Amino acid sequence: MTAMVWDVAIRKSLGSAGQRFELDIAFRSEAQRLVLFGPSGAGKSLTLKAIAGLLRPDAGRIGFAGAPLFDSAAAIDVPAAERRLGYVFQEYALFPHLTVRQNVAYSARRGWRNPARDEPGAEIDRWLEALELTPLARRYPDQLSSGQRQRTALARALVAGPRALLLDEPFAALDESLRRRLRAELFAMQRELAIPTLLITHDEADIDAFAEALVRVDAGRVVAGEPAD
Image (cartoon, one colour):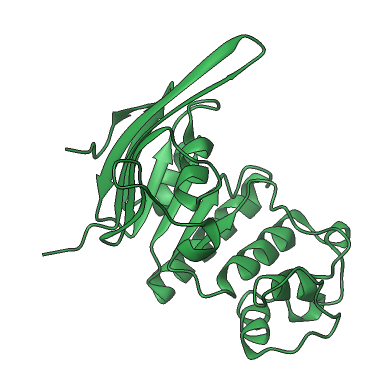
């Protein structure tokens, strides 16, 4: 029997400027490549942040690979750093004052001190090489193309040895030709690493290129896909 990878059933009420948004989303999936699809403002990023531990639901549960990450009834809330989920933000969130190597190294070490420009580490070297970033290691984010920044963000997520990848609209800032190439690269990398990946998007081309299973989200709720029991 295939193990359940994702098990999510959460509620979160948010409000600002007199407006309320109710996130009430539930899905379960065994997929290694799961896509959450829906329009902007549907609640996809909120869901991803809750899974990552960056947003605390008001109630519900989040499970990954059979283990609870959050369960309001059982008073479980695993800290984000202990969930070991690699998160790639939509705008990549690279540190502008750090080089490519330092950005990647930041996730490979503990503490808040910035890594040295020549921070040693076999895993750092491995992912710089794997994502073709070694020649760019001394460059800063503003000296990189959009595709190079995306690969740097992926390397930073992977260097810590995550149990899964969470990708927030990873191709949204790229032109169409680069989107096609990086979709193919991401698909190949996921297949090679066999690392569960949850990708959110509003672009149907991402579904065609990457999705093993699909959950459609709108107005904070699942409207089609693999709903929870």
